[in-house]
Image 1 (cartoon, rainbow, N blue to C red):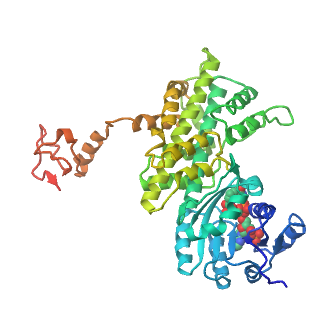
Image 2: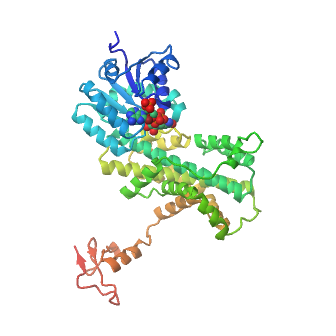
Length: 492
Ligand code: NBP
């Protein structure tokens, strides 16, 4: 009978991600029901990719819901935004209390916050899950970052952890936290991906223009780096891209227009960092670097109008400099992940989410774009101390940065002297120096603010006295000489 509840899992959205995820779920012993807005795609899928597998189809939402075992486990893999809300509305009349809707698209986390609350009022358990790894990941093991209504987790854990990527035998999937926490963590993952890519591009530029290496030798450098501390998916694909020659035998990468595109998740991360007051500078620079690259026509005009130093012929020990560059990349990457975790930590505080930090690093270890050996060290750091205030305080990373420091400084200074931009390397180093500075020049800034806007300041405890009491907001009449305290001295 057509409407018998036969399927363990339902998936809506038969584009590239949905089709591959269905095949993955079916391969792990679950029966899946497939549905798509354009229903001809259901038939095409059943007749081709899904043939012979435990996959059934539906041609209406009603039929789809009837074919699912209770509580229904329904995943949406459709374009983020309105389509998700539209599907939720069309599903609701056919669901029962306790059913589960999972949004696996790239939704913005405030939407997942809203959907969790809205559906909870209707007795439906909502999960917003980050899915990373693209088509290949969806088919053979994505990184999955589910968050939302925690009661849903026991019902989907088995499927999610079966189909996800594995790292050292552990599933790259665990419960992230409340409401939109899963999509938040996916957003930060994407922001970190922007940062990693920008760092790699800066290293490539230094090797190309600073050392004058041909593309195949730069590829050799990345091949070597991929066997060390930088071992990661992004270094690996960079190596492959650089080795790839066009039909004429020259590197294809050299012919690609240098205007970067972006879909917005890096920007979301940077905007959220500004909203929460967290100095996530590296991701910010990575987003702005893409924006700068997009001004190609203007840059062409500027290149003939604006002067800078000519890159001198490199005369020193090339291998030693390449080793410095490797360390600069490693140290900057540590800073970027430290900043990413600072943002996640602050979001948990601000939004009242319970988050599991070791599991976040674990989820990024396999299946996703930022997967790397390095994430194992982050997992260990948070497993050793789940309350770690900052990744940089972990002994392993503290020592790693210490070791990398002189090479890192050498690379950033050479970039400045040669006129080769290193926004991500530089901002990482500036952050490191700022973060470890006990007394920053913000004392002067506070005085300026008080001077022109009576914004008040506070006194350092060691300088407190009856005129300048500790912990009070103080305003001074700065145009009076000799440090006189104005009549309206204290604003308590
Ligand atoms: P797309 O993002 O291209 O979405 C295609 C699906 O959305 C189709 O099922 C399409 O139905 C449906 N859809 C659209 Br478009 N507009 C709709 C509407 N107004 N109402 C109902 N359905 C609508 O597919 P994708 O690339 O497979 O990605 C799916 C989700 O996963 C997205 O949120 C994406 O951001 C996310 N994601 C993608 C990747 C990746 O590597 N592609 C990785 C990780 C996450 P139709 O067939 O009837 O047009």
